[in-house]
Image (cartoon, rainbow, N blue to C red; front, side, top):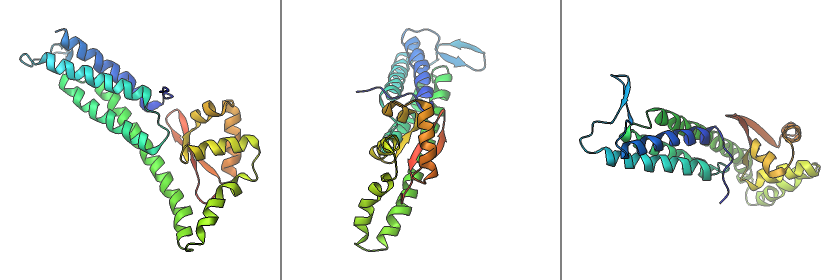
Length: 223
């Protein structure tokens, strides 16, 4: 299994998971682990013998967040949704052990919000494509199906080899892909990918939407 390329979401959840894991280990060892807001210092959570159980929950939550951050690749709608649910679930459960000095909870929760926003953008792009390409075709009856199948070859016909390579990579990724991943998959430089996307965007074949430190490239419907 290949490690996912780190995004804003996975960076937040990875660092947050590390704090939560550290807090859980400290609880298991009986060392200061929970943030005492009133006193302004670190102290073991007063749980009446429950620190080992809360520590175990903290360790499991932290490990789940770290593994999800490293191995769930945010290239498709289902994977983004899965990552958002995992991060949100384990960031909340980590509060039983103090949420990794609260820092871990805040970071991982921010990662969940970021993943949720990514899911919204991709889902909105998929809906837009369906509305532009699918609804219009459905109104034309059964004879619209061949035209839909021919849409991709027609879109590619005027492209050069490098442009076709990027276009095909986006198609293979179910119509949406991070620009950083396009650089990785194509083997082209960042500057070259940006220039090619400028042309594809000018032709109305794709659109770019800002996502954290990179762009989400979405195939436009009816291309």
